[in-house]
Image (cartoon, rainbow, N blue to C red; front, side, top):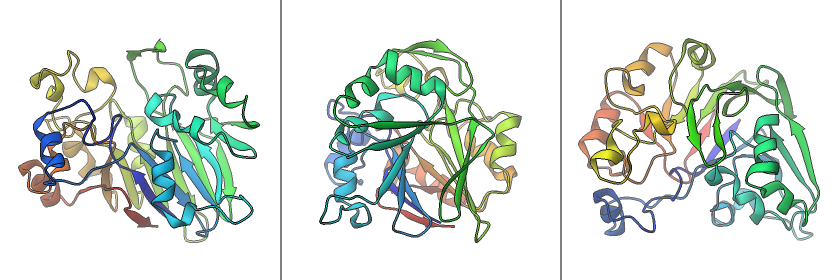
Length: 295
């Protein structure tokens, strides 16, 4: 199984167009790498690819990766899109795929309902191309292709966003992907508010974990005067702190830990930042666009 990180930043990318925070300023001055918005592609054979989330940068991401380029007859290696949630930074790219002959979409009923009745993205998309919705049920195996399978798992969250508040099953999910030939497992978890005991079970012992790295500190955006809510209040577990992901993950026996979905304010986006060195000393990595992981 091969996973390609298409976009490693959170919503807005890095640098964010309207932000002059220290990290964005450093990236603009080329002291750090620019990053597009969060998405990955997975394949068992390097021929058939499955996107997990479709960011607003999906066109740029496809063009940057020859493995996703179309053939002469407009057939595409993109087999389907799997969604972890209904957030705009994970779903707006669906509209940019509207020229497809047909689009297969894996999503939970809760996410499908939001995209149909809340944001209206699916209603708009269906005016341009047929959409085949395949329901995702947490805890139930999905056979994707060529020995590649996945199982979604619920990610508990208590937050309020433009689509309302809720804790219903399937509002946010992660995916545990398995290559049945090698037995390798990979967990993709770009949004998590708390590492509950149930999530420990999903993560433990996987060969590679790609996990939410939105903020370094819980009050990161508050300190910068950019928001009134903490990272946790926005649905994202901070990396630092006594109960942050950095403190909790080492006990889970993960082979390789890579942070994804970094907010533009997060200092780990800069290679020379002390926070980045702290992660490196802990054996953890920071994703960049184009990173490939073989499991």
